[in-house]
Image (tube, rainbow, N blue to C red):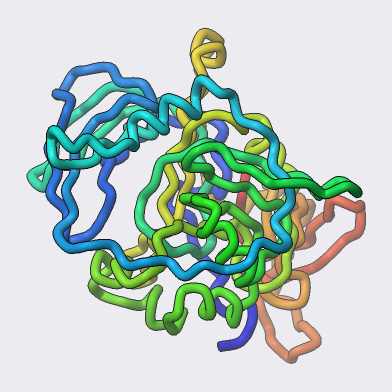
Length: 348
């Protein structure tokens, strides 16, 4: 599979980053071999760190091979009170014969599904990825930093969702798994490295009909890539949103299914201080119009972000010989770029 061939998508909510939106999400750990007992009821208000279900998995978990510690940078310390809450909520409860899971979202319980999932309505910020892998997990958003010259022991808060602004590699993913990181949000990775970590054919994984079964055979760490396959850096606006909410708990899903139109996403319930301010939920519009901010999603300029400043009335001829409808973009550095409309997606 060639680099960049799995990155084109239509975002389920319209844009890749939505600062404010009202969402409903089912809290469900995934997997057929899971039994759950809801600990909340419809109409109840819940906090993101609050346990909402007790689960029992049938069969033992696979052991994770140990890999040497090497290159993961230090991360910022998350607030101790939040980390301790999620640590307690994820602890085993032998007297009840199961493990409790936190909501991951703050809001109101809307319903309990037949399989025992808890549907929560929340005022949230949403980040939608291009491709990912792994079941839904809740964790503390943790931004990493480059190592200092002295280096030193690296540490992670309990159940971290590690934010990596740049490209990943398979060694970094394996090391994060050993450190207890439950999820990684990064910009991109090569298809070879991602397949090496997941131990699956990537095309078969995202084209699989039985999504639940496909996730069951993956490493127990969820991955979301904001830009997809390749070596593309994370856009400034995406990094700015993640940095703003570091230290908060969020809900991450890496499940990707082209057949079912399911893509990975990170949902962050807005903190109380923001909820007290005027509420302006977004209504994403994917229409390509003059003034819209867009991202080039394929081709030589993949990952470039700009504003549409002109829509050509007639089809344009490109160097490849293709004749297509096109737009002229003013990129972030001020340069102009003409690209086919089929290669751009609106992001705000």
